[in-house]
Amino acid sequence: MTQDKDEKALAFLHRLNVAAERAGVDFRKNSRGRQQHVRQFVKNVSDDQLKLTLRGHRFRKVADLEYILKQRELYREDDSAIRAPQPREIQAGNVVRDRFDPKCQARVHVAQGDTVFCEARQGAPTTARSQIMDVGEGCFKL
Image 1 (cartoon, one colour):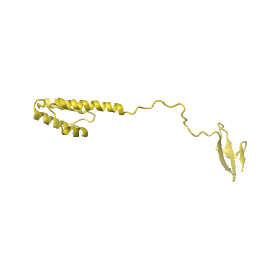
Image 2 (cartoon, rainbow, N blue to C red; image 1 turned 120 degrees about the horizontal axis):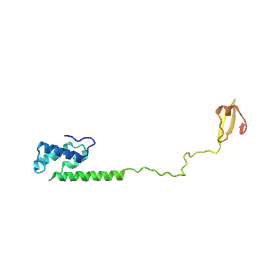
Image 3 (cartoon, rainbow, N blue to C red; image 1 turned 30 degrees about the vertical axis):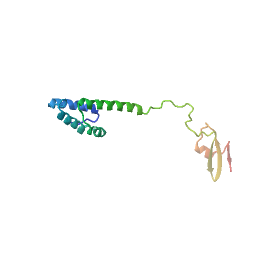
Image 4 (tube, rainbow, N blue to C red; image 1 turned 90 degrees about the horizontal axis):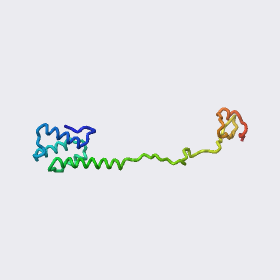
């Protein structure tokens, strides 16, 4: 019997206890049966850190192992609640989205070998063709 992917260690221990009781293994009163039962649990648990932690321990009761697993789950839940980053919902209202906002847009165009400077007024729709062809108000030649 192995631990499922999303199964917690304590739930796996309970499932292993039920299977051992059905098989007739006396792991609650018999010390040899308890040692084999705990060894089987440590061998089949999927968490490697938990394996290393439990490998060197001796348990007088299976309830001691259950207590350790319960405490471990409680600490993990507390740690995950503390470590979870809180999403930032508050945003400053005075933040400028686009830092560069020119007051006047100046463009340089070359028309038949002459350099033409043209100031485009803000908000006035202009196309590149009209800017190149027309040298009108706000534009001058060099």
